[in-house]
Length: 600
Image (tube, rainbow, N blue to C red):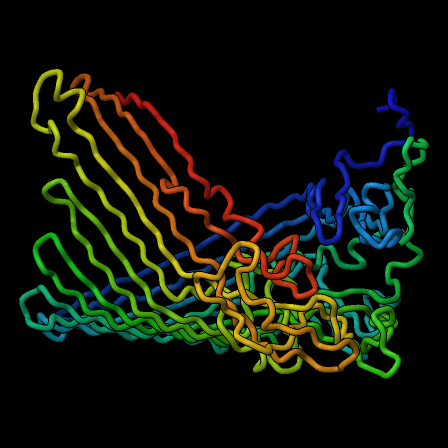
């Protein structure tokens, strides 16, 4: 780089910074990088089975000890935010090399999280007769709260003063402070009963009726505590509201802000991610009733009703939304928050969310015979909740943040995970052509096997939002007003206008109210995909063969669009591309591949 005039000193990180262009895209190093994680799980299990007459009793205990060591370097390479502060257009500012803001984090302190779970249980399978069996069980789950070996976790208790960090603002406490020996209390009420039955309806072994009910608990995941690793005072951040620009020709001055040592570990308007002190273990009540019928010896059909009721589910709310006043503006949001000027936005991870699922599940299973098999499954279901997490992701601030932080009943609606109809069929067919033919013709044209899987699913709900924060409460999860039917007829939907954008109206600025549109009231694009393959196996010797494969993914090249959201939020009424479908499902285009495999 020196040959091009880049002569400023090393920046201390080998990574390129993140460049974020508002409303367009971001490129560069991921915000989270160069982290170290070590997860050791020690497990003890002891199980005993006792069988006597009609009784089969099982009892035991499962004990888990998790040692989760973590060191994260969030935003170590720095982030340049380009928001259009110079020209009013973010793209123009980018072309002119005019960043609006720069932030850079310091290396995070290592953290050593520890958690223990002990779960004893007992179960009895009682065979009343040859046609009816009953199941009874009870499990107790003692999930001790996660601790950090060096007391490196924070808590928010308004009005209380930390003794570990006396300079911390009042309300910010740490593990080890009086009354904060652990961040959340131990939930000792996790009794999980189970009951079930299996009944041979006609006594011929061809028709069965099964059912069951149980309560299941979930522990507070240790990975959530990774939020504390990047919290003050365990890491600090440098901020430059007016960084140097990227002048052309390059002047040789570093665009980075240099060595910005914070004047204090606890600056004003400190943002916090905390866990609610009244956090309870999430639980799910699950029940099912299934009837199964054997039509022939190789064909079985099944119908099930499945239900789940989730309570004490985790989610994130903003504890200190800005208080409205006659002088409220977007510029004084932070000053109007409760607990200002010490604290900015405080995100609270709490177990106050709920969900319901009801589903009809139908399956037909043709086991392999006469060169053919298939498995078809159809689900008609509905999922309702008041806050949805992305599948597989749990962290403070991840998922839906409510519009009204104080009344979750207004958030009740279709879950982001709801898919009303889903049909999946897989099939295998051994082609009969030249299957019994010997000689050259049989080796060339015989022995082909055709496989496939087809998935058809209706769309998931779309959350319509207004990120401009018209009520000025400092939460960008407001919803607009609903003034019409938001769902277009199927024949009128296009990628440029997938739903009726005219059905929404923005809440007037400074109206000091929420929009009346419900949560997740628009249905997104469906999914239709078929993958097929053609195999042929050629025997070379007794223990050697050649396998030829031809595989085609999305054989009909059906475009499958993602819901309008993401980096360019087309579910946002404030966006110029509101209502558009901008992205297809990753790797969903038609892909064809050939392979030859030799096995011996």
